[in-house]
Structure formats: structure tokens, C-alpha cells
Length: 529
View: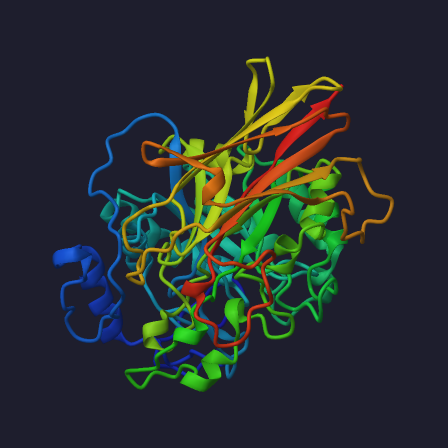
């Protein structure tokens, strides 16, 4: 066992860990998972073949095509927040604490990638985190396994990243563009700026000034990484009250590095707590304990329709940021650690939440699409495509998600919404249908004087559409709407649901996540002159 601060020896998964899941990772389980993931064998109707040993059982998924030879941009589903066995636990009986493989999350990266492929993802990011010296764990152990995973599951584009222990805030994902120096670039970021990298902990590393320095450092890299804040209101104490992550921090991050700090999880992971089924004698939460987590593991202030309050409240923080004209995008992730069938509170990557980016199926195009906000998100496979376009009536120029339309004072705007409501069963075996689509509209008034601002009073639901207001064109549902006489800079965004709720309601503990599904677009900006 290596105990030098500059070297890292990892203990066996059966070693003592302070993590709640410290004894979860078993060699037999990992071997079975690798066998299942790499076999790719399925039974009729897309069900998994009976796995050997104790591999996890999951519901009947809609399988992604085995080979995708299409070219050109299209909607590509992905997940930028996925943990592997290199999200380690810690043996605190040593100095410094020794990382324990599989102590916090349990699956090999290759298993995650194979499951991502199985559940229809085209791209993913390995985002492990840890404590002291984790930058070495990531560089020396996780990265070689990521390279193996890329070779084993080439259908899924796999980025190297981390879940940063963000100085003075909750976690964030850092996604490194592909490149020969990607491993060293990521190691430099984690080594220099992760708030838990050193032992003993340093308060100086856990100040907002340290995060600003981290963003300045990332902003100087070529190409630049992208960063999304994770579960931003998980520690919030109430509606409009914030915990580890604050509106001020988002504004400061985006001011310093607007091409790096580009958004937040609109829908956090950990959505399967009510489905948790402890088995195999693993050291995971009991049925009752898991249900007490609530969706997203939001225990103080609940999610709303599975989405963070910062996103779900019309006129709330997200709209306040958009009202400044900030290009601040939302995503949806799994935060996969341990599958609910084994006592965890998680879905597999792509099993429940998907972040769609409009891009060519290349690493550079996906990063560019994320940075440009060409993104929509959905839960429960409620939809598989969403195209929103805006044009001035009588003009040819159009704008789509993440873009900006130039218009003249007095112009009428034509908004066209097209979505594909996938008619196949989702991974739960049901076929949810969109019951309503909302068009949300807000004014862009420029920077706020108070960086703690979390309201945009101009934002409102402009129109609600049900089936009587849309038409079917091939396999797409189409809605058109006219906005008359625009006079101010503004933005438009879309959301939809399978529920009858006019606004997403706080999620009670124990709620079945499959019954309460929503999708959201990212905004289109209108510049009026």
C-alpha cells in the first residue's frame, strides 16, 4: 500500500470504506456485469438474455441501432454525468486516506458504455470523483479503462471528464474534448483545483476565488472544456433558497468563462429511489431508506416533475439568467452509481434521462453542439426529437435552439414546433404520450444589478397546446404559432409533459418517476432592432 501524497495505491473493493456503498463492489458482480455488457445478447422484444451469476436485471429497453451509418447532424442522445468504480471510497485508517476501488460507484467504464449503447445513447462522459490524490486514480487507472471502453463499445463516443468537487459549490462535470493530451489536461484541472484533492483538506481550495482561478485556467486551454453544474439545488433549504450553489456563483462563473461554464443539470440524476430493490446482501440502503431520498436525492426541497427548481419554476432562476441574455443551457443526466435493481437509487445511463444534442456523430461536433446550446432534454423517452424554429413573417432567416433571430420592431414571428413522440415502449415497458406542450416567453433586459437575483417577472407561459392544436406530418407532430408585433429583445423556450399539471408540482417521496415526465428545450433568443 502506497501512502506517499504523490502516489496512490488502491485497496480491494472488500476493504473498509467510509462510503455508504463501501462494500458494494464484488469481483463476481463486476465480472458478471462485464460479461453482460460486452455480450450485447438480447431476447425477443429487446429483453436481456438471462445473465450469468448476479448481473442486474433491467426492464425491456428500446434498443439503439447496432450500426448507424448516417452522416450529417441529427439529434444524438447522451449523458455527461456517469460514475464508474473509479469513484472511490476512502480507507481513513491510513494517512493520507487510501482510495478503495468501487467504494462509491461499482461498475467498470465499459459496463457503463455498453449500457449506454443498450439504452440508446450515442455519447457519454466518464465523470468520476474522489478525495485525496484522486487525480492520480483518474489518470493512471480510469483513463486506461476508458481507452479500453472506447475500443470495446465504439458505437458510443466516450469523453474523459470528472465530477469536480467544486470549490465553494456543489459538484460540476468537466468534459474534456478529445485529444492526445486529454488525460493530462484533466489531471491538471483536478490536481490544481478540486477542493478535496489534498490531504489534509485546505480551506483555501474551497473558496469561490479558487473556482474562478479554475475557470480562468480552463478558459486558457485549447480547445476549451465545458462545465455543467450538477444537482444545483440539492442542498437548497426551500424554494428560492439556495445551499452550496448560488445564483451569484453561476453569474460569476459565466462572466469569467462564458464558453466553459455553460449550464446546469435541469433534471438531476438519482431519479430511481422509489424503485430501489436491495438484493445480493450488498451494503446499500434498505427499501425504506432509499425511498426517503426523494427524486434526485433532494431531501430538503424536492424536485418538480423531476427537474431542479432552478429550471422548473417559470420566471425563476433559469429565466433570470436568460433574461440577462446569458447563454446558460440545461441538461438531464443519470448520475449513475448503483442501479436501483441492486439497492441503488439510479437508472443506467440513458435508461430514464437523456440529453439530446444536435450534432454530427463526432466528438468535436458534440462538444460544439453542447457549447452552442443545441440541446433538449427529456425523461422517460417521452419524445425522441424536438425541433423549434422561429422566423419573422415574410422573411427567410430562421433561428433554432441556442441561436438568435434578428427581427425588426413591429415584426410578427412565426414559431414552429416539431416533435417526435416515439411510439415504442420505453425501458419501463410503457408508451407515454405527450398531453400538452407549452411555449414560454420572457424579455431580455440585460445584466442585473444584484447577482443574487433569481426572478424574471416578464417570463410567462405564452400559449399551451394540446392535441386539438397540433397536426401530424409523417412521424412528427407539428405546432405553429404566431407572435404579433415584437418590440423588445426576448427569448422563447418549450416544455411538454404527459401529465395534466399546468405547472410541475413538487415531487413527493416515493413517487413513481415513470408517471411524471417532462421535456424541455433550450432557448431561442430574439434580437429586436
